[in-house]
Amino acid sequence: MTLPTLLINTEPARWLPALRAAAPEMQFRPQAEIGDAADVDAILTWKVDPALIDALPNLRLLYAVGAGVDYLVDLARTRPQLQIARVVDDAVTGDVATLAVAGTLQWFRDLPAYAGQKQNELWHPLPVRSTADTTIGILGLGRIGRAIARAFQALGFRVCGWSRSIHRMEGVSTYTGSEGLHAMLPQAQVLVCALPLTAETEGIISAQVLGCLPPKSFFVNVGRGLHVDEVALQAALDSGRLAGAFLDVFAEEPLAPGHSFWLDARVQITPHVASRTRPSRVAPQIIDNLLRLRTGQPLLNLVRPEAGY
Ligand SMILES: NC(=O)c1ccc[n+]([C@@H]2O[C@H](COP(=O)([O-])OP(=O)(O)OC[C@H]3O[C@@H](n4cnc5c(N)ncnc54)[C@H](OP(=O)(O)O)[C@@H]3O)[C@@H](O)[C@H]2O)c1
Image (cartoon, rainbow, N blue to C red; front, side, top):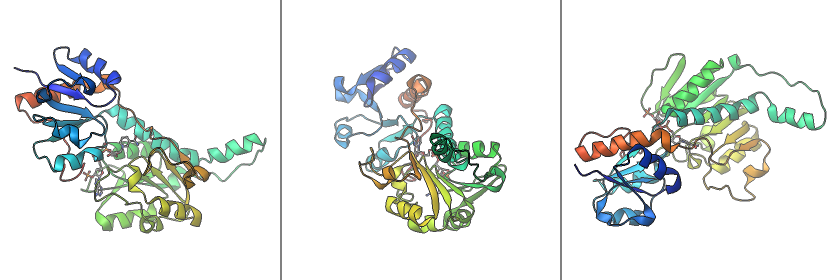
């Protein structure tokens, strides 16, 4: 059997050693050493230039190195011979959930305010917010949204979640559709976005959606920056609808100098660091899928281009 060839389109210095260690007999080529383009069966990538895809006549698989595939689905829609798979890793899921919880808790327990007090040697207790009185609303109940839900549940928060299809999760109130969203939002003192970016979810954090939240609520984004109407988010902060926000992702990255989010003390920022896939953890699943591709078996962790995720 001829083994498939994988072109590495992202960070070859990180990915090649892990892949070669896991399958020394297989062909992994950094893009700089592409060789005969007709050999390439699959690309391991984050974002890929459509011209490269068009230059690979036998390409059948785009392999996303992260959970988000928004950069790839449009490319596959117009090329029906291409499948998209993504790496799936509980460590990535856990890392994103950890940041969503950490971002929420620092606000929830007034840690920035106490850090300010410490600088001035002030001892000034603030009212204690209780987890039992606080509802977390999670947009997206996929791998990451469910992990976020479980983490908040374990701390005693009330949790509700919204997804495209209805999910059953013990102890979590679940919603779907536009009606479900509007039923969930008024309860969500903390709204966490863990959605994929699709035509349906782009701009979902709009003035209208933010206006449905309870006053002085908190917003966390570990999804994608383009989920958010950033002007509407700033207006919600300025009107007091939102007490604060924790943002890991932005419409434009890096966040532009002088952006209002840099200047607003109520906005906490991390530079898109919720997770980073570790090649050695996911190399075996990539190799398994490449072998499936070659032997005509169904691939694992496939993306549905028609759904956009
Ligand atoms: N900040 C970071 O560094 C970072 C790292 C990893 C991932 N992410 C982001 O997190 C996203 C989610 O990852 P995941 O692994 O949890 O994805 P996933 O397993 O595919 O789950 C996506 C969830 O969103 C729901 N959804 C999709 N479209 C919807 C719509 N129109 N209305 C309502 N719900 C909708 C899905 O509903 P169903 O369950 O009904 O299908 C599902 O529950 C990624 O796409 C990526 O953008 C960010």
